[in-house]
View 1 (tube, one colour):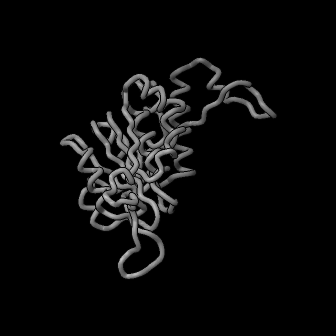
View 2 (cartoon, rainbow, N blue to C red):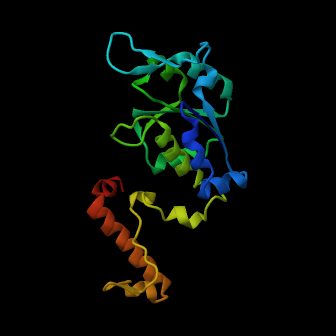
View 3 (spheres, helix red, strand yellow):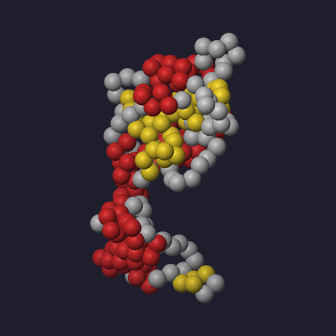
Length: 222
């Protein structure tokens, strides 16, 4: 998979691509991540990428030319162009599983007051990571990329993401490690029993219990 990210602040991604699981996925050539500065595509002599919005109002608006040219330069028949915006569909694990089947993702990070409306004509999907507003699309772009990359074959053990929260519309079960007892709180006996059938049964029951308590809306989808 290849992921191209268009941003006004490329250095925000330095840590993201050079640490932990994402770094190892890149080194193993399971994913290619390219960070592009939108300003590099500006035809303005001062590399201007934004301007005041028509009709008044505060804040600057990203101009269409640099983003149109960037997408047209990078896009192929295998590309899916994603616009990060609070107005998009709310992201979830199901969308992550759909995106992992794509060969090439182009993610556009917004900033300032927003995008020129005409930019929407060159995107395939608009995505929001929640009902709140950030200063830009860089953090959401990292979240999308991380959630998709970890699903690629060979990045992590398949069992790790099969049992993740939101698979089958259930939250994950509780997990414990050493010590067996800490400040009077003990690991459930069933996890120490070695009886795998009982452990699986307990984990499923705990998933349903936790989902019912914390996210009953997910159970309605089941």
